[in-house]
Image (cartoon, rainbow, N blue to C red):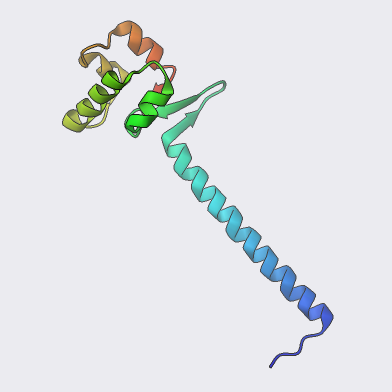
Length: 109
């Protein structure tokens, strides 16, 4: 049907390869954009958005056990998103010292 010269085939292969690389880069940027909404990268550590963190995220972040993670999830479900990390003090079992430690791990956008 089509008969291309060797040079034409090379040009077509180059254009197809370039297009595929562009699609791959675009996909990678979209994936990173989703990650950046959940994680805030600072100068020395990454912080997690307390309003978007899942139960597993809370447990894996450190400083929070299963019971406290459930309380945070329940608080979020009943009161909505956190406006500041100071609101964590309203949860039984979280005091000023713990909030100070959690500020290193979590953030509120």
